[in-house]
Length: 326
Image 1 (cartoon, rainbow, N blue to C red):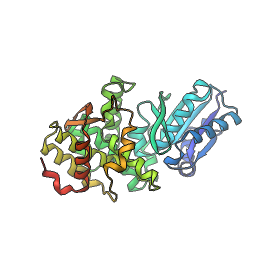
Image 2: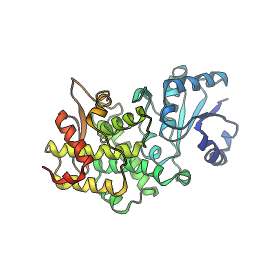
Image 3: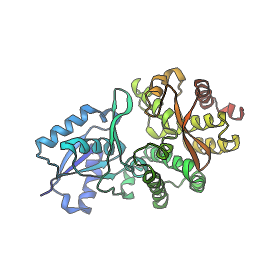
């Protein structure tokens, strides 16, 4: 008989697990593995702890791992399941907006090494992903905005009407909005499951965003993934202006929409994020590579960007008054 095991953090055990067990009574006897919250738990050390627990509880390749939580849980849970006994089935039950619209969709998983984001991982796909907006009631406004950043990204790279709708009304927790983001990401992933070509556009905002997130974590000051990506989207959009890919008018629309909903209480420099930028998996042949928008709703990938343009973009982010610079 299949053995069910939950992989969750403490808050999900308290608030989300009872609701889930009520919905799916066949999981009422599942063993619960509780993981400390935060990116600091998305490591190979934590993965080994989970593997040890799976062995202790007698899990087999026929057991089912249920990843109940946000993006950290779905990432490390899929990573653990994919490698345990060369692969055990798993399902994602995302409880955050970020996980529902992005992290739990698409088959990527990874753990961090030192302060470097997503340096070890695989491509594998869950048996299913169950999205239930009831879980969003447990989230703060700041946590919800984590997911909103990714939803805005989906619009910028793929669907202008969706972006304008989100930017205009800010109604990012509706089932329609969530469904649109899931559909956009699924459409992109279906064209390129293993991130070799078009799927790379999903990295828009993440090259700078991950570098900033890593820099802050290395200094003991974690910031949310969504805020880091929002900053990354502004910087990378400005790079697109500098490369004459994106018009100043389109840039202003994107920047204004992001700054309308996100506040940035941190600063960063090129020197501060340089080593993390160069650790990004998209870089090739000694060149920094980015996914950059051509217009709202269309994005290109594998764009080489000179160091001077990256520095200019960071300055642009830090001093918004230079928005109209050429």
